[in-house]
Image (cartoon, rainbow, N blue to C red; front, side, top):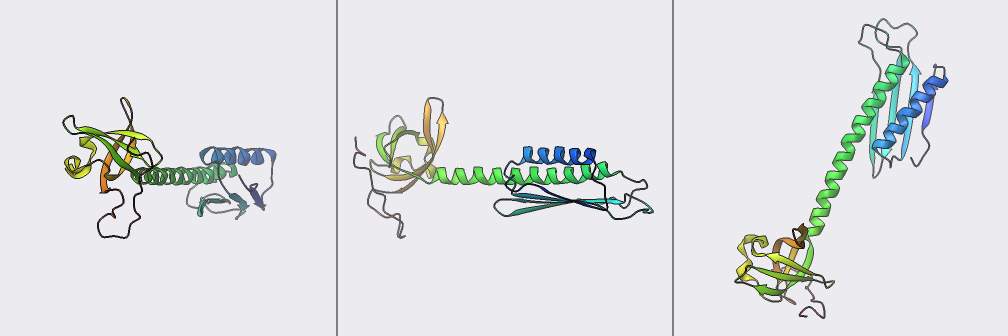
Length: 209
């Protein structure tokens, strides 16, 4: 945690048992998300003799980069029994933990989606074509040679490929090593894609080798 947790007690005696419980629960939150920016915990007694529910309330405010805020609160007011303070603390932390888990899942899904999109933006040139066998090889602009199969070319475009055709592709691990998938024809070297103002695809100096 970038900032040490801030714990506030209001009308509640801070005992060693309660402090140990809070620290244990904070550690579990950090286990779920190890890049929490800050965590503020307010533990208070709101009523001395409530008619129902618990006299305690626990609120947890957490910030997670880039700009997420999580708020979890436990204030049992409808139950017929007095919930002890440790139970209210556990409820609040459980609620915060569930929110952190969901946030983690959303962020990981977003990261995977961005990685996939970036992979599809990899640019290469067709350097070898074996039409009868239905495969060929691409060379990326950093000189890496990648195998591709005709079934990986989008829109049945394999027959339209020529030596030097510019493509975008995603890299995946095949049975015999890295190979290109979702190969999309862009243009020929030095020719703009369609009529747009996209940057020219410049072939590497040794792209024919």
